[in-house]
Length: 254
Length: 380
Image (cartoon, rainbow over all chains, first blue to last red; front, side):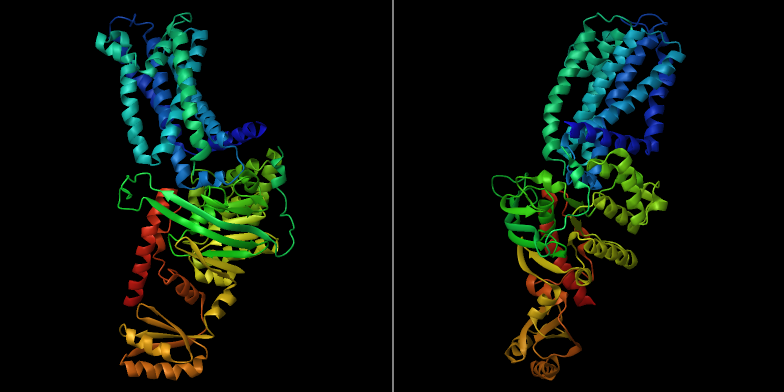
């Protein structure tokens, strides 16, 4: 157990070092979400519909969706980094050391969650500067849910990477998977605007529950059913995916 | 758990004791895409016996060379001995521990530098050394000190904060070696350590490997370069088709062929000449390699005129003759039936290291490369 914690910490710091050396990520990872907020957010000002409310709180409806988008799209491509480490022989080298196999997964996911946290805080700060009104306790809860969704996405991505073992195949699979998940979840506009059939499909999308939970929490309605449901669905899926991925890290990393 | 124990000078073992001993070690890869009909998607055999039972002994303190044509099972063997692959059969003791039962104890005592270097190009030099020291249980301050020591020893001090991607081939290889030695392993595995290096960088690396032996470490290396084995290795083994075909010191193996060797450059193939030569009393054996005929003889100076007369009788014109001592190249050709890909280095596709599927692939690649070398020699 002590070895697991220490190895997780060592690999976490190394992973952060790796990320900080990746200039492209710093520009894209931090810049893109802000661009969505600044360049797309204002379009919503004159959109009217059920569940959209008035001008004033539209940002607080849009920002939770944007946070979930960052959580999904950022984390689902994390497997590419794992494949880069597989390609350069680094995973093989690590596998020949006494490092805890599980720490390879936990160290990486902890790193991913840290990066996501930085993106989310920046996004919230820009949103606040643009006049978003959000419930403080609800914002903290939303942040928690966003990090859980990111954790789920990253773990899934690592699992897919170890199955597919090829960058272009993984990128294709992730695109095929995330596009419909994102569209049907009501990321950009609440699914309450959708016709009945689309609303029905949304209920099969795990991300939908995360998005709805985040919207309700952000609005300060912490007791609403979608908040615990969002946490429950995401948490359950994390357990399921962890059970799928962990043996792959134990056995199949090289 | 005190992994700390892993970081210390190599334990002094009695000279000549075995640091690796394998018995009947084997590994078979199944092609996951293979259908029930027994052939894989690309017409590959459904099952590849990469290593078919090898008995190998490596003594403490020696530099041991592991040779073989592409796809012979070299990398698979190394990956088993370094605990990266689980053997399907046989047993082995590595660095004093059972390969099947105690892989974690072995990992604490060995170092491994793979063909690809194992260092992420996006990271910086020093961080990799610190991580390696941390993973072997050194606390942070001690890990920093150790990293600085390794930077100094491998002449990387000026490069400590440079991204790995900006290093030259030789510098990157020095870093890989430094990372693999950070925890002072008693047994170091090097898979093709000098592949693609220029002669100067290669000589520098040889120097470093020799220094390891002086410090009491054992080095197990695979290579394509016979020259490397001649310069560096105390003993060697050749693997072909997943089986060990020969094991010994370079001198022993060369002497076991014959006292001298005559290399005849012919204008064309001549099976007739081969049979004529085989009848001469001084000739021990004859090996054809393209249009070069290697004639292994007991006494070169006396054999030479007889051989030339035989060629005349067979009506074969000879473009060139060289008399010399058998080389490792001769040893390799004798035991594998193939010229080594030393000179031409057509072994660009020598990867075979990315798991079972690639290893399967390199079986075909090996045969292909062998053929290609034959052709290039004929052309030259």
